[in-house]
Image (cartoon, rainbow, N blue to C red; front, side):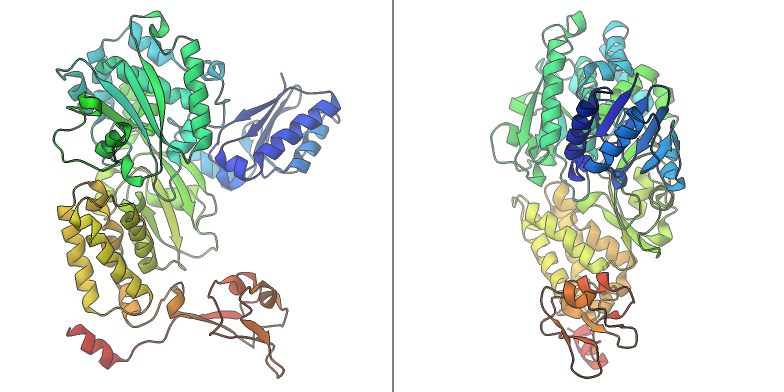
Length: 607
C-alpha cells in the first residue's frame, strides 16, 4: 500500500510542516490519486525538517528533507502521476541514506526511548500496538508479580533519567513498601532546561510508551492514580497526551479494569505554569496541591509522604518510556548497552555550534567526541569546538581536551559536569565562556524560588560579579570571591537548584581561567562581550559591496568621501555582529578590547 507521511513534531511544524501537510492533502485531492496524508513525530533529524516520507506501491520508499509546500506538490505529482520518485530533496531510498552525514547521525545511535519516534502516528493506538506496544503491560499483568516487576527493573540497572541518576528500583521498592495503602504515581514532564527538548519530543512522538510505562509502574507499587505534570509551554505535547489518555481509557488500557484485569489505574494531565523550580519533586507536589511551588526540606521524601500526604513515586518522561522495553525484552537485553554503573541508553538534545542538531539516543559510555563530532558533524564553521555544556543550567562546561570522556554519571561528575536531563550545547571558538557562565547563572538566579538566603542572595551576588567581568569592570579579587561564594551556595542551599547553580561558574573557572583573566584586563578573546569589543572594516580587504551598510540597523556604517570605502562609527555601533555575518570578504574585523595597564592590575590584586 502507498503512504504519504509528513513529520509534525514541533521542529517540523516550526519549519512549515503544517503548510506542507495541507499542500500534500490538496495535491492528492486534485490528482485524485494516492492515500490520505499521515503524520508522524520527530525522527530526530531536526536539522533536516520538514521531512516527508513516501511509500509508493511498485516504486519503494523515499525520504525527503527540507520540503516546502510547493516542493511536496512536485514530489506527489512525480510519484503518483509520472510513476517515479523525484531526486529533489531525496536523502534516503528504501532505508539507505544517500548522505554520509545523515547516515552517521542515525547509524551511531541505539534507539530505545526513541524506538518509535518518527516511525508511527503518535495519535494512533493501533500504530503503537503494531510495533509491540502494550505487550509489556500484558506480561506485567499476566506473568509477573509486583515484586517481580521491580526485580526486573533492578536487574536492568535503570537509573532516573531526570538528573541525579537515583536507582529507579530502589525508589519503586520504597513506594511499594509504604504502610499507607493509597499511593500516587507522577510523571515529571516539567522540562525547563535551556536547550533541552528530550521529554517534549518523546511526548509528541510516542505518548503511549509513557502511559504504558506508568501503568506498569502503578502495578508494581500498587497505585491507582497517576498524574502527568507537563509544562503548559508544550501545547503539542499536551494535545497528544490528552488524546492518548482518552483513547487508552476507551480501549480499556486505563480505568476500572486495565486490560480486563482487577487492576484499577487512571491518569490525569496537569499543566504547570512554567516555573523551573517546579521540576524539583517537592516543589512539584506543592504546585499540584495548589500551593506556591517551592521546595521543602527532606526527609520525609515523596515516596514516604508526598501528594496529599500519601506515598508518591515520581520519575521523568524518559525513565517511564524505558520501562515497557525492559519488561518486554528483559533486563539483560537492556543493560547490554552501558558503561560501568551507568547502563542502557541516554537521550540528548544536541544543539549549538554543530552541523547536525536534533534528538540523539546513544549507549551510556559513548564519548562526548562521538556525540558532537561523529553524530553532530563537528562545528558549523569548520573550526575546532571549544567545549560542550552538558546538564543544562545546573551542569558544567567540558573542554575539548576532555571530549574522550565517556557519557556516564560518574565520569561526567569527575569532569565537572552532570548528566542532568540530557541537554547538550556545543560551543565553538567564538563562544565566550565567561558570558556562558553569566547566561546560565542569570537563568537559575531568575528561577530561584527565593526561599533560602544562599540561593536567593548568593546567586545574585555571583551574577553581579559575572556581569562586571563581561563589562570590563571587575577586579582581580573578584575571581577569589567567585570561587568561595560558589562553594558556599552549593553547600548551604536548600534544594538541587541552588546546590548546582554554581556548576557553570566553577567548571569554566577550572578549564577556562585564562578567559576570566583576559576579561580582568578588559579583553574578550572570543569577541562576544559587547562592552569590551568594537568592529572595524579592514580597508585592504573591503571591495565596497555595501552589504554591511545595508545590514546595519543602527546606521553605524557610513561612506567616506575620501579614499576609505566604508567606516564604522563605534559610538553608534550596537555590536550585533550583523555586518560580520554578511561580509563575504572577511573585511569586518573585531577588536577584542584594550588591555588595562599592568600597574592597575597589580593594584587590584592587592585589594
